[in-house]
Length: 257
Image (cartoon, rainbow, N blue to C red; front, top):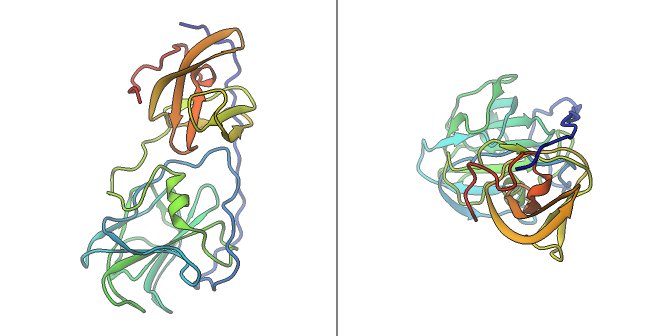
């Protein structure tokens, strides 16, 4: 057991995003995802078979299933486009998420949300169809760095950073954050070892979802020694539990990896 004597103040980053375009974006140079302390937990967009992945000339991922299959928002955000008779798409929806990224959904036969509507991660927004340039019922899903991007980024790593691997099952995405880190220059490593590669460095307190914890190298810092490490799927690595803001060295309610 340890007694915490740390500041828990967390600065909030508010992204100002440009006005949304209401036509599909043309192909161009792919934009990188915006830098953020940590990607928010995400949700599976729909169930089905991936029939086409992201590649040159195809800005998104196609997931095929039966007509009427539910389609869900992959994250919290605001609907910035919901329209029919859109070139190539038939019907489409665009959602601007709280981190400034944008997701795009196409070919539906039914839309269930409207422009300026606030939606939550995992909320039903449409039903799968085959409108527009389509050879069968499927969802064309895209992810963009912002409303100003000229080409979508690869949706697979975008979703993976939010705890969703394709193909996926709706409702099985990563839960909400359950802990907060503290301190600065906190290294996220590929394995629970001090000599493992660093995949990310957190510059300040960060809300995280700890999926599981395990034993690894002993770490001594800030007067504490601990061999417990937490796995953070959204960050793709492990953090020593010394930097998880909780009085217990072994986190309660978290399974062992």
